[in-house]
Image (cartoon, rainbow over all chains, first blue to last red; front, side, top):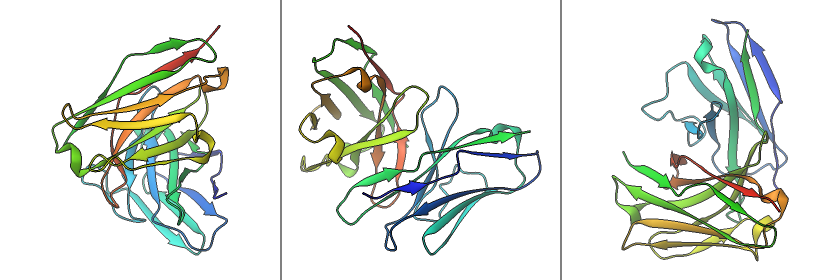
Length: 107
Length: 118
């Protein structure tokens, strides 16, 4: 089955850059999406179609891909960015999958 | 922009079924599919499947095939998810989300907590 692997946690000081990776065991894949979830809230989409930002996503959030790994980059982390982050993609059969999630801690 | 409002929290006994509704407002319902995602306490997101609001076609995650049914009612712009044969492991927060083409899950419901307890 298709799996997406994320680091369980990432810690960063305010103003620094955070990188959250998402790796796939499949060479071919569909688009990747990123979601942010704060405690007690529903997820919110951050990135769609690998690198596109919806209008409500701050510019400090960006994404890139290289081979079977995609990376969410948060440049100039703010305290409000402390949250869980999930990548999501799919396979050619129409199945979708989420990564296990990464807890971002702002020190 | 659109909004999805889900039905209230539920408590069910093992073996029972639960139906969660998801009412769409502020956009044309049949322009977007609805997907369902659940999150067990302290755990990550788990995709359950999706339903096309334009033709009712469904695609379920393998883990749920045989005991999940996703439907829509275009007369009330409401999507439904029914999960049967509940076990304690089905205790979770269940979310509906709107999916438009390649734009991802761009609008989410507030979540419905389903507790399975004897």
